Image (tube, rainbow, N blue to C red):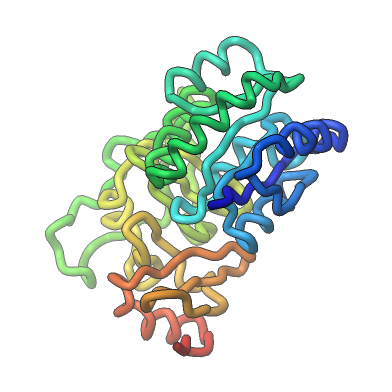
Length: 279
């Protein structure tokens, strides 16, 4: 079977050079080339590729920014293409990620493709997402919830429980007070949470349970084992396979509503005004 891949790099010559080298791999099909992170996100949503060759240093959204913004269930396998320094390469190797150094060496590309084939056969994209988040935390830093941020009345009924209006995220010596009203959706990957708010993604070490305790369920609902959405941001529902749906948010991002959370559809429709899914 063919591995469907996209190439993401802001340098046309770099994209062309990688495309020419990949022609030697009969089982890899390049389905799109993207010149920036925004195009990459659109291509992932539209094409659901198996593999992404991703440049890290791009203007606007970096390769790291792209990884943060892709929902866990939609993330393809990733081979980083980078001119980064030794520190970054050490981090890639420590977390068992695939990478290519510019200029791309054909022998190194062949070894990376062998690893991709092994991962593809085992369907390990979810495990790779967790590795990616751990790597990003090492390279770019991570936040933590301030001590005492969880509501005191954890055993109280929902109506009586105090919910957070701000998420206090401590990054080093700085504390960011994130207005929960700006949160669009939250994605989990292993020990890390990606909080998407006001066009930015905050990576913090926390659990889904902790955030569910802090956020008002009348506003935020879990729609997948790894995803929480702000109900007010849902604009439409699109049916998928096996009783699942995709929720389209104001930002244009799509997240999956899994079959296990189908009981949330009525609540989503009440809040979003979206047409009910069919099929």
